[in-house]
Image (tube, rainbow over all chains, first blue to last red; front, side, top):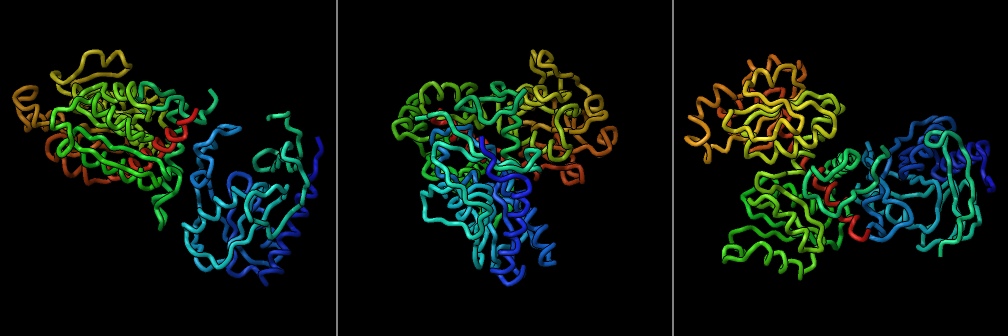
Length: 181
Length: 312
């Protein structure tokens, strides 16, 4: 199945996004990164490292588990219920610009849940969305502020993001899923 | 064994029904739930629109409050029924109360009852998931789970831990659930109590049984004291409370023979000067208040995992 991003391209996209973040926010003052578990977390950490390289400033980084905010907890799911992991936001989000980081933007429902969760932690000045892949098919009025790559897909396809920290290598693959109704 | 991603039953009737990977799942989920208690807004919408009924037929303060708090933090709608002021005092049977509740279609029922097996009875009548909050002298699964979470937090593991459980072994559902859980997870359990309060068959569960507290406490990583239900005991099972304290009370001197980093646990409510010396209860070994905090997290984990099982 086609690899739409290899390790090189993932790395360059994350560096480009770091520069875009600095340009748009006029520096790294008052920024904080929050990765959505699982794969948003290493992405947020890499962006923090890139922001340090490009802007010379440390940006606080946290992780968010949105399982308890999902709208499909009680519905039949394709896979097993995700296991609940710790949310870890070791700083106040009040008054900051939060960069919310996830691997794939699809229906927008995960981001909706993440926004609800973030609001429970305080009142940020702004929330901006960073995704590695935007595959389209939004079901909610949500868009990303920074995108690694736009990948046109059909709903029958699945997008697999693999990251070094979790899967042992960096790549993005598009799979055909066998006809499930 | 592969890690569990869900519980296999819709009910939590006892530790006896759980496999080790399900116990791990509940404890891991509870760790994540604990963080919610540290937020400014201590509430998540996971059980929004779900109804939980708390049926407490027996006096209980901490367990009932702990469950209520857990339910509220998950945004469930809760109703409480206590014995006084309900139709139970008018002579309604448990089965009839259950059928009445069933007609209101709750999602989960938390039950505490003096009769062993009542949660099981409820599970045969109601469609709701049943959570046992203590039934007679049978089981108190969420207590054992919160104890396990506290031990794992402090010791980093359960397997291989030496755990001494001291007190009224005969009437204790806390003992039963803890023994089942700890032996499943590979801990070494020593149980100690007066000869009149040792139940038959305890050894068959893989427990070392003794009447000497010094033998039980020697090298122990964890000492768990059980409450002496003295209102039912004196003159029947025990000659006097003072004698009990002399023979079985946990004092700093006795703890010296335990592991140097021993922790002391008690499910509460404590009888200071009966089973536990105040110097121990308030001392550096005591994790009794951790147990209370962990109770809320464990109950959130159980309610969340059971609610997710509803349609499967």
